[in-house]
Image 1 (cartoon, rainbow, N blue to C red):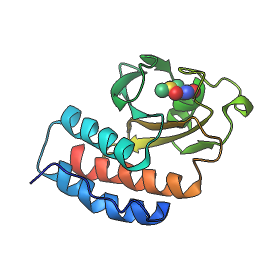
Image 2 (cartoon, rainbow, N blue to C red; image 1 turned 90 degrees about the horizontal axis):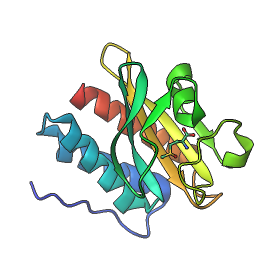
Image 3 (cartoon, protein in one colour; image 1 turned 45 degrees about the horizontal axis):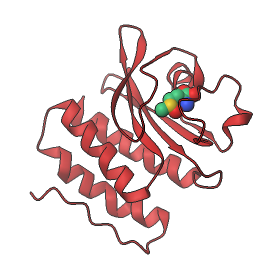
Image 4 (cartoon, rainbow, N blue to C red; image 1 turned 30 degrees about the horizontal axis):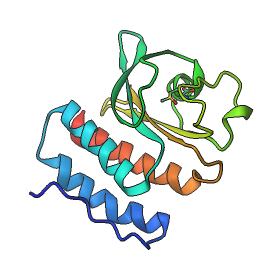
Length: 162
Ligand code: SME
């Protein structure tokens, strides 16, 4: 297939997720390499939503280690329970942080990032494979629609990659 993502620019955010998910599935469905697939997912999300930073941290030897991402350079390792990423891993649930100043222990990889969503991604045996992290430089950019859409992306990763 052609590696192109087509999303209607004027569509609502929920509609953009509806258009994106089947295209992501087509994009990664024929490839088994995890790095290639996570890299394309990060690129497709960045292209669709224009966020400041989007990418994956993967559980490796008891820590989260930076994986494929789009955006400025970021912290490479995060311990369990630390920051938004480590907390989402520990609690095994998505965390929406509309204002990072209000989240004690938030890890500021970039001072320009002010809002964040972290979604845990599971293996088929229900272990945490890693987390999908989205950061915005706008306080009003991330909401429950994104949590729902990103959880769908996480489920796609579980189904196809792990
Ligand atoms: N802010 C995150 C760290 C990762 S970066 O934002 C890319 C956290 O508190 O876990």
